[in-house]
Length: 254
Length: 209
Image (cartoon, rainbow over all chains, first blue to last red; front, side, top):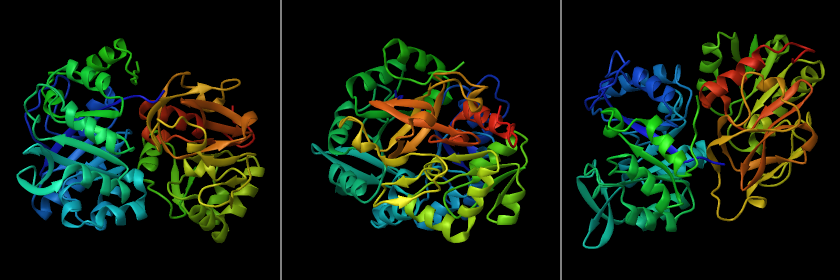
């Protein structure tokens, strides 16, 4: 049976993972390579590397780090951040990325999803949508969640999936950082609108939030989080054991 | 030496890294003379069947592969590379494959329940079919591997060595003598995937055990 995926997200700036990280047995806690190896060995089903570098020098460092990671970690890698053109897809795919996530790049260039899907296949193109409620409607936000584009989120997601996005990450700005659970209401609307895999992001504070997510919404395929994994508040092995106890299909290994 | 066939289809970075990690000597090549000297062949591939098959046949690699396979050299097809081993694919039309293994490739939409998503993407477990194949000698039934596919091999029952459950049993792995295929990506399947590649890298001409 296909299992529900647990995905840690690493924000990388100038070759280092940002956000404080506290792990036993990891010597360089800011090293993307060391952390990726740690997560891979401890049950992560996939990893997301998010490039939050602004400079082109930083971008080169990011690409080098990605190559180093992909030489040692053999689980699916998704790369996001700074993906604005098909050349950006090429740059990260050559370094071992399997999937590429687009956000502002797709808003600025509506053909990007379609162009990339034609070259690399739908399975390679992940739409990352930052969504916030505005007067009762779901709007797409850009620039890291700072700017309201006014675009209706559900129409946008449907359009991008039609154009070839093979997976959708739903980042709820309303629940992000609050640590009181995923945005089930928002996710339900997205799951009902598209038939591609949906990844829930924003709001996880404890193991039970993932259990609630998967028990409430059959259409959600994966849960993504950052700080709760990095700070060790939730250990992926514990999370997966709890999922198993709740009869949620999960990949366990010894 | 393992020759990983480079015919312009898909991303070989992870596969090469996996083989390097196993200390398995590998070269990425489209050079037929080099392919003919290899002890083992891996046929990778991601993308559309028709385009990939055209590239193999037009370059002459297909003809060499068939003669190498008939000569007993271990051959492993991965994902689209596995699908190319069959007689035909029904992906956007009907296209001929290498016909190294009987069977054909058809959309999974024809067999899976309507509520399941396409592609079949993510980690799923292996069910061994028939006796445990030497390709799996270092892994166990129920181990998880990573899949991404919308088409699957059909009518290859006798040669199926593993299946995976996605509403119905889909073909996960096949073997006919020295020619083998994995629908999943061993190079993306963590330690389990590396162990599968390791057993392949230990196979010899005329002796895959």
